[in-house]
Amino acid sequence: MNNEQPDRHQRRKKRTRQKLQKAMLELVLEKGTEGISIQEITDRADLGRGTFYFHFDDKEDLLWTIVGDRIRDTERQLIEDFEGILPEQPEYFAYLNMFRHVEQHADVYRLLLSSKGSQGVANRARNYLVQETLQDMENYGVFKDIGQPPEITAQIVIGLLFSLILWWLESNSDTSAVEMAAILYHTLHHRQPPPEGDSF
Image 1: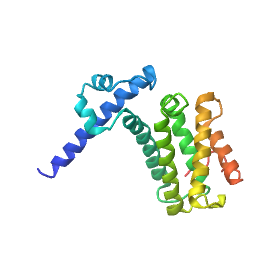
Image 2: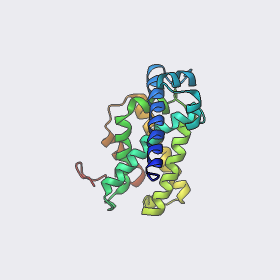
Image 3: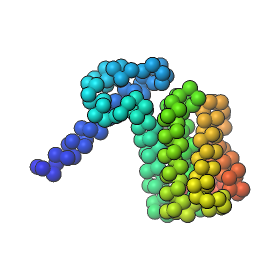
């Protein structure tokens, strides 16, 4: 019986976080990121203000989890697709995975990461991806062909990736995720991407 208690607690905590995230996301999609009050969020989620502050420091912390959780989800999907085997040209597939992910959640990212969104959330997303890239370089030996120290390489990769994603979102370009990944891969690695249809 005691072993079940933490599981119930974790499930309840996860459900509460999801309710607050859902309420925030609905409000952002309705009215943008400016002017949303914590009271509006908790009213929409049918929760108390104390519950909000138990889970999040402020609105920006909540906004970040909406983006951060989605990024972590796509990272988990990439690991599952790898099935423990690093593909040829793994950097290309990392770019493709990210562009496809952004494409699927374009409305959310356009509101949260664009010039009209939250600069704090955009900075946290950029910094998170830089740290993840450094770990991937250490664990998998990727991005070696860029030929710069790891920290500089991570900044180059994520800086360009982030700039392209923001341009892609704000311009409403009809360039596909596959084409964007191919452009970035060719620009950074001076190689052609795998033939269309290749996968993990």
